[in-house]
Length: 322
Image (tube, helix red, strand yellow):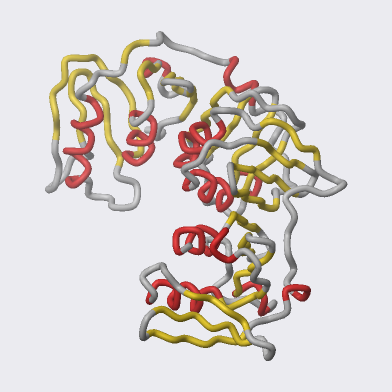
Protein backbone atom coordinates (compact mmCIF):
# COMPACT_ATOMS: atom_id res chain seq x y z
CA UNK A 1 0.00 0.00 0.00
CA UNK A 2 2.73 2.47 0.93
CA UNK A 3 4.45 2.16 -2.47
CA UNK A 4 1.13 2.82 -4.23
CA UNK A 5 0.47 5.88 -2.06
CA UNK A 6 3.92 7.32 -2.72
CA UNK A 7 3.44 6.65 -6.43
CA UNK A 8 0.23 8.67 -6.74
CA UNK A 9 1.48 11.31 -4.29
CA UNK A 10 3.89 12.53 -6.96
CA UNK A 11 0.87 14.12 -8.62
CA UNK A 12 -0.71 15.71 -5.54
CA UNK A 13 -0.15 19.38 -4.79
CA UNK A 14 1.73 20.58 -1.69
CA UNK A 15 -0.45 23.68 -1.75
CA UNK A 16 -3.37 24.60 -3.96
CA UNK A 17 -6.21 27.09 -4.18
CA UNK A 18 -8.36 23.98 -4.64
CA UNK A 19 -7.97 22.23 -1.27
CA UNK A 20 -8.86 18.80 -2.65
CA UNK A 21 -5.68 18.71 -4.77
CA UNK A 22 -3.62 18.23 -1.59
CA UNK A 23 -5.58 15.00 -0.98
CA UNK A 24 -5.49 11.42 -2.20
CA UNK A 25 -8.82 10.03 -3.41
CA UNK A 26 -9.62 6.41 -2.52
CA UNK A 27 -12.35 4.81 -4.64
CA UNK A 28 -13.28 1.42 -6.12
CA UNK A 29 -10.07 -0.26 -4.94
CA UNK A 30 -7.99 2.50 -6.55
CA UNK A 31 -6.20 5.63 -5.37
CA UNK A 32 -5.67 8.86 -7.30
CA UNK A 33 -3.63 12.01 -6.83
CA UNK A 34 -3.85 15.16 -8.94
CA UNK A 35 -2.72 18.79 -9.01
CA UNK A 36 -4.90 19.92 -11.99
CA UNK A 37 -1.96 19.70 -14.43
CA UNK A 38 -1.42 15.96 -14.04
CA UNK A 39 -2.97 12.95 -12.35
CA UNK A 40 -1.81 9.47 -11.34
CA UNK A 41 -4.07 6.56 -10.45
CA UNK A 42 -3.21 3.00 -9.50
CA UNK A 43 -4.81 -0.11 -8.04
CA UNK A 44 -4.75 -0.49 -4.27
CA UNK A 45 -6.57 -3.72 -3.35
CA UNK A 46 -5.79 -3.21 0.36
CA UNK A 47 -8.29 -0.31 0.32
CA UNK A 48 -11.01 -2.10 -1.66
CA UNK A 49 -14.40 -1.18 -0.24
CA UNK A 50 -13.16 2.16 1.15
CA UNK A 51 -14.39 5.47 -0.26
CA UNK A 52 -12.80 8.69 1.04
CA UNK A 53 -10.56 11.61 0.15
CA UNK A 54 -7.87 12.26 2.74
CA UNK A 55 -4.86 14.64 3.14
CA UNK A 56 -2.04 12.96 1.23
CA UNK A 57 0.87 13.83 3.52
CA UNK A 58 -0.90 12.80 6.75
CA UNK A 59 -2.27 9.56 5.31
CA UNK A 60 1.11 8.48 3.95
CA UNK A 61 2.81 9.22 7.27
CA UNK A 62 0.15 7.27 9.13
CA UNK A 63 0.48 4.22 6.84
CA UNK A 64 4.27 4.45 7.11
CA UNK A 65 4.02 4.48 10.90
CA UNK A 66 2.09 1.21 10.68
CA UNK A 67 4.96 -0.64 8.98
CA UNK A 68 2.75 -0.79 5.87
CA UNK A 69 0.24 -3.05 7.65
CA UNK A 70 -2.49 -0.60 8.68
CA UNK A 71 -6.12 -1.14 9.45
CA UNK A 72 -8.04 1.66 7.70
CA UNK A 73 -11.64 2.55 8.50
CA UNK A 74 -13.91 5.57 8.18
CA UNK A 75 -16.70 6.38 10.62
CA UNK A 76 -20.09 8.02 10.08
CA UNK A 77 -18.64 11.47 10.78
CA UNK A 78 -16.12 11.08 7.95
CA UNK A 79 -13.08 10.55 10.18
CA UNK A 80 -10.50 8.20 8.67
CA UNK A 81 -8.84 5.96 11.26
CA UNK A 82 -5.47 4.30 10.62
CA UNK A 83 -4.18 1.84 13.22
CA UNK A 84 -1.60 -0.88 13.76
CA UNK A 85 -0.70 -2.47 17.10
CA UNK A 86 -0.35 0.48 19.54
CA UNK A 87 -0.39 3.22 16.88
CA UNK A 88 -3.60 5.18 16.13
CA UNK A 89 -4.16 8.16 13.85
CA UNK A 90 -7.34 10.04 12.95
CA UNK A 91 -7.75 12.52 10.12
CA UNK A 92 -10.66 14.32 8.46
CA UNK A 93 -11.82 13.40 4.98
CA UNK A 94 -13.62 15.04 2.11
CA UNK A 95 -16.57 13.59 0.26
CA UNK A 96 -15.36 11.50 -2.70
CA UNK A 97 -18.05 13.10 -4.87
CA UNK A 98 -16.45 16.51 -4.25
CA UNK A 99 -13.00 15.42 -5.43
CA UNK A 100 -12.20 16.66 -9.00
CA UNK A 101 -11.32 13.18 -10.20
CA UNK A 102 -9.64 12.69 -13.57
CA UNK A 103 -10.58 9.87 -15.95
CA UNK A 104 -8.00 8.15 -18.14
CA UNK A 105 -10.11 8.68 -21.25
CA UNK A 106 -13.30 10.49 -22.24
CA UNK A 107 -15.39 11.16 -25.34
CA UNK A 108 -12.77 13.61 -26.65
CA UNK A 109 -9.80 11.24 -26.46
CA UNK A 110 -8.42 8.60 -28.78
CA UNK A 111 -7.09 5.45 -27.10
CA UNK A 112 -4.31 3.68 -29.02
CA UNK A 113 -1.47 1.27 -28.28
CA UNK A 114 1.56 2.90 -26.68
CA UNK A 115 4.94 2.82 -28.48
CA UNK A 116 7.22 0.26 -26.83
CA UNK A 117 10.09 2.74 -26.73
CA UNK A 118 8.09 5.62 -25.23
CA UNK A 119 9.83 5.59 -21.86
CA UNK A 120 13.31 5.10 -23.32
CA UNK A 121 12.77 7.88 -25.86
CA UNK A 122 11.55 10.39 -23.28
CA UNK A 123 14.44 9.49 -20.94
CA UNK A 124 17.00 10.05 -23.71
CA UNK A 125 15.59 13.46 -24.67
CA UNK A 126 14.79 14.81 -21.20
CA UNK A 127 18.26 16.35 -20.53
CA UNK A 128 17.95 18.44 -23.70
CA UNK A 129 14.66 20.19 -22.83
CA UNK A 130 14.92 23.96 -22.58
CA UNK A 131 14.28 26.00 -19.43
CA UNK A 132 13.89 29.19 -21.51
CA UNK A 133 10.55 30.74 -20.58
CA UNK A 134 10.82 33.20 -23.48
CA UNK A 135 10.41 30.23 -25.85
CA UNK A 136 7.62 28.26 -24.14
CA UNK A 137 7.28 25.85 -27.08
CA UNK A 138 10.80 24.56 -26.31
CA UNK A 139 9.96 23.58 -22.72
CA UNK A 140 8.59 20.23 -23.79
CA UNK A 141 9.12 17.29 -26.11
CA UNK A 142 7.56 17.68 -29.54
CA UNK A 143 6.39 14.45 -31.21
CA UNK A 144 5.65 14.70 -34.91
CA UNK A 145 6.08 12.69 -38.13
CA UNK A 146 7.72 9.67 -36.51
CA UNK A 147 10.19 11.58 -34.31
CA UNK A 148 10.35 12.98 -30.79
CA UNK A 149 12.27 16.28 -30.58
CA UNK A 150 13.89 18.24 -27.75
CA UNK A 151 16.01 21.38 -27.72
CA UNK A 152 17.71 23.70 -25.25
CA UNK A 153 17.97 26.27 -28.08
CA UNK A 154 21.65 25.42 -28.67
CA UNK A 155 21.31 21.66 -29.15
CA UNK A 156 18.47 20.07 -31.12
CA UNK A 157 17.97 16.30 -30.84
CA UNK A 158 15.47 13.78 -32.11
CA UNK A 159 14.74 10.08 -31.70
CA UNK A 160 12.52 7.86 -33.89
CA UNK A 161 9.21 6.80 -32.37
CA UNK A 162 6.20 4.97 -33.75
CA UNK A 163 3.66 7.70 -33.05
CA UNK A 164 0.01 6.86 -33.82
CA UNK A 165 -1.39 10.37 -33.48
CA UNK A 166 -1.08 13.98 -34.63
CA UNK A 167 1.73 16.20 -33.33
CA UNK A 168 1.78 17.02 -29.60
CA UNK A 169 4.01 18.98 -27.19
CA UNK A 170 4.49 17.16 -23.86
CA UNK A 171 5.54 19.51 -21.00
CA UNK A 172 8.85 18.91 -19.27
CA UNK A 173 7.20 18.18 -15.91
CA UNK A 174 5.10 15.43 -17.53
CA UNK A 175 8.12 13.99 -19.35
CA UNK A 176 10.04 13.89 -16.07
CA UNK A 177 7.25 12.01 -14.31
CA UNK A 178 6.82 9.55 -17.16
CA UNK A 179 10.55 8.71 -17.09
CA UNK A 180 10.25 7.88 -13.39
CA UNK A 181 7.48 5.31 -13.92
CA UNK A 182 9.35 2.03 -14.18
CA UNK A 183 6.58 0.17 -15.96
CA UNK A 184 5.89 -0.94 -19.53
CA UNK A 185 3.34 1.39 -21.20
CA UNK A 186 0.21 -0.32 -22.52
CA UNK A 187 -1.95 2.36 -24.16
CA UNK A 188 -2.23 6.07 -24.83
CA UNK A 189 -5.26 8.28 -24.34
CA UNK A 190 -4.69 11.41 -26.43
CA UNK A 191 -6.86 14.46 -26.97
CA UNK A 192 -6.21 18.02 -28.06
CA UNK A 193 -5.45 19.05 -24.48
CA UNK A 194 -4.06 15.99 -22.71
CA UNK A 195 -2.11 12.75 -22.90
CA UNK A 196 -2.63 9.68 -20.75
CA UNK A 197 -0.36 6.64 -20.53
CA UNK A 198 -1.69 3.42 -19.03
CA UNK A 199 0.31 0.65 -17.40
CA UNK A 200 -0.70 -2.61 -15.79
CA UNK A 201 -2.70 -1.51 -12.76
CA UNK A 202 -1.96 2.21 -13.15
CA UNK A 203 -2.11 5.26 -15.40
CA UNK A 204 -0.67 8.77 -15.69
CA UNK A 205 -2.32 11.76 -17.36
CA UNK A 206 -1.13 15.32 -18.00
CA UNK A 207 -2.10 18.49 -19.78
CA UNK A 208 -0.34 19.25 -23.07
CA UNK A 209 1.27 22.49 -24.17
CA UNK A 210 -0.85 24.13 -26.84
CA UNK A 211 2.15 25.90 -28.39
CA UNK A 212 3.45 24.03 -31.49
CA UNK A 213 7.09 23.91 -32.51
CA UNK A 214 8.38 25.85 -35.56
CA UNK A 215 7.67 23.98 -38.79
CA UNK A 216 11.34 24.26 -39.81
CA UNK A 217 12.60 21.93 -37.06
CA UNK A 218 12.80 18.72 -39.10
CA UNK A 219 14.54 20.60 -41.93
CA UNK A 220 17.55 21.25 -39.67
CA UNK A 221 18.59 17.65 -40.17
CA UNK A 222 18.79 18.08 -43.94
CA UNK A 223 21.67 20.58 -43.75
CA UNK A 224 24.52 18.33 -42.70
CA UNK A 225 28.03 19.61 -43.42
CA UNK A 226 31.46 18.24 -42.61
CA UNK A 227 32.79 14.69 -42.39
CA UNK A 228 31.09 12.35 -39.91
CA UNK A 229 33.82 10.80 -37.75
CA UNK A 230 33.97 8.74 -34.57
CA UNK A 231 34.00 10.64 -31.28
CA UNK A 232 37.33 9.95 -29.49
CA UNK A 233 36.65 7.90 -26.36
CA UNK A 234 38.96 10.11 -24.31
CA UNK A 235 37.36 13.41 -25.37
CA UNK A 236 34.58 13.65 -22.76
CA UNK A 237 36.80 12.59 -19.79
CA UNK A 238 39.40 15.14 -20.93
CA UNK A 239 36.83 17.94 -21.08
CA UNK A 240 35.61 17.08 -17.58
CA UNK A 241 39.20 17.39 -16.33
CA UNK A 242 39.37 20.92 -17.78
CA UNK A 243 36.06 22.28 -16.49
CA UNK A 244 37.28 23.09 -12.92
CA UNK A 245 39.92 25.39 -14.43
CA UNK A 246 37.55 27.56 -16.50
CA UNK A 247 37.76 31.17 -15.32
CA UNK A 248 34.28 32.15 -16.42
CA UNK A 249 31.90 30.13 -14.23
CA UNK A 250 28.92 31.12 -16.37
CA UNK A 251 30.09 30.04 -19.82
CA UNK A 252 32.96 27.61 -19.09
CA UNK A 253 34.21 27.69 -22.68
CA UNK A 254 36.36 24.84 -24.02
CA UNK A 255 38.63 25.47 -27.04
CA UNK A 256 39.76 22.95 -29.67
CA UNK A 257 43.08 23.94 -31.24
CA UNK A 258 44.67 21.21 -33.31
CA UNK A 259 45.72 18.39 -30.98
CA UNK A 260 45.03 20.50 -27.87
CA UNK A 261 41.82 21.14 -26.00
CA UNK A 262 41.98 23.85 -23.36
CA UNK A 263 40.29 26.47 -21.23
CA UNK A 264 40.81 30.17 -21.97
CA UNK A 265 44.33 31.45 -21.33
CA UNK A 266 44.87 33.16 -18.00
CA UNK A 267 46.24 32.85 -14.49
CA UNK A 268 43.94 29.84 -14.12
CA UNK A 269 43.91 27.50 -17.09
CA UNK A 270 44.43 23.91 -18.21
CA UNK A 271 45.16 21.98 -21.39
CA UNK A 272 44.99 18.37 -22.55
CA UNK A 273 46.78 16.92 -25.57
CA UNK A 274 44.81 14.47 -27.69
CA UNK A 275 45.65 12.45 -30.77
CA UNK A 276 43.26 14.33 -33.05
CA UNK A 277 42.92 17.56 -35.00
CA UNK A 278 40.15 19.75 -33.59
CA UNK A 279 38.85 23.25 -34.20
CA UNK A 280 36.28 25.46 -32.50
CA UNK A 281 34.99 26.71 -29.16
CA UNK A 282 32.06 25.28 -27.21
CA UNK A 283 30.26 25.80 -23.95
CA UNK A 284 31.38 22.95 -21.68
CA UNK A 285 27.88 22.00 -20.52
CA UNK A 286 26.70 21.65 -24.11
CA UNK A 287 29.68 19.46 -24.94
CA UNK A 288 28.93 17.22 -21.97
CA UNK A 289 25.35 16.72 -23.13
CA UNK A 290 26.33 15.99 -26.73
CA UNK A 291 29.28 13.73 -25.94
CA UNK A 292 27.17 11.86 -23.40
CA UNK A 293 25.16 10.36 -26.28
CA UNK A 294 27.18 10.94 -29.49
CA UNK A 295 29.11 8.12 -31.16
CA UNK A 296 29.92 10.03 -34.36
CA UNK A 297 29.93 13.75 -35.22
CA UNK A 298 31.09 16.41 -37.70
CA UNK A 299 33.42 18.74 -35.71
CA UNK A 300 35.05 20.04 -38.92
CA UNK A 301 31.78 21.84 -39.72
CA UNK A 302 32.51 24.51 -37.06
CA UNK A 303 31.66 27.44 -37.05
CA UNK A 304 28.60 26.07 -38.88
CA UNK A 305 26.31 23.68 -37.03
CA UNK A 306 27.87 20.37 -35.94
CA UNK A 307 25.86 17.16 -36.38
CA UNK A 308 26.10 14.04 -34.25
CA UNK A 309 24.66 10.53 -34.10
CA UNK A 310 24.21 8.10 -31.22
CA UNK A 311 22.14 5.05 -30.41
CA UNK A 312 18.58 5.88 -31.53
CA UNK A 313 19.35 9.60 -31.33
CA UNK A 314 20.74 12.26 -33.64
CA UNK A 315 21.26 15.96 -33.20
CA UNK A 316 22.77 19.25 -34.23
CA UNK A 317 24.36 22.01 -32.13
CA UNK A 318 26.34 25.21 -32.46
CA UNK A 319 29.55 26.31 -30.83
CA UNK A 320 30.72 29.64 -29.42
CA UNK A 321 31.59 32.32 -31.97
CA UNK A 322 35.22 33.48 -31.73
